[in-house]
Length: 401
Image (tube, rainbow, N blue to C red; front, side, top):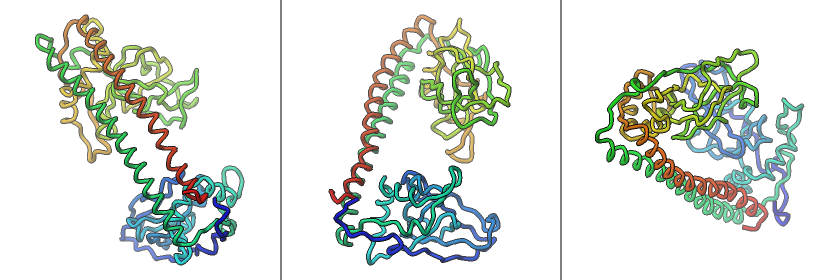
């Protein structure tokens, strides 16, 4: 931070809020969570007073500074947004009123996202490895450089101008990725539409040697290491791409089910999750004897004398098959929908000879490779964009912006 600015203690510009309210058992309250790495202050959940294990809570109001005692050292701090006015928090999330005649809340909000501020919070945290907590006294004793209010506001305006440009660039990147995916989907649909005359009409059930659901035991948080068993997450199945590293390690206390392992040519389909992530197909290109399908995946083993697994993967990703699946997804909200084995079995499609299937797969693979090149470039751009805001903040609080 800039050495040219006057130094003040946080305790001189922050005053701990002691505003507590009694909880009405029949009223609904918003609870707050503070994300790590400066990702903001958001609603955790809405809950009735009777479900809260206390009769009083601290009441939050917009513009207050909030910090997590437990995760302050991981960047969990920020400002209460307007939509959390009246939310309630526990003593684990101290609230502070900002002395607005000396400190612009937005200036503090941006400062709290910097690596230097997080480092200060680490210094103010104490305890053993698993019980490190922020000391409020040490936190308030921390010194920060503080320019005059007019300069604070100028810096905030400049940061927000540049942050808006970064956000716009990220949105354009996201749109480009969506467009690339849409172009590929349209190409698959056009190919199947234009060449399907004379093909054999069938359902998935007719060409499947077997359809199997998986198993979801309690697993470790991390992925399986070599020699360990893992259970595939739904994120292992991307559009026409299989990511075997997306798995959770099966604990040693649980017995593996080898019949649920993945073999080359298995076509996996997501059956539960967010609307856009259900009905997604991908083919395993090789055996994965220590990876099992979860109960949110359906494994199709096609009859290889009829169907090329990769052709089935593309057929299931086509607008025709997806139209059947989308119309039959069930669930109370887009965030959690399902398709059944019966729906997947009934999915209609048509297919040519195995030789023609192989030719179509090669053609679509070539197109997919071009799409992947675009995606790889966009991923590089994403890394650059992610690094821009921290760099902007670093310069801003060194007085160089």
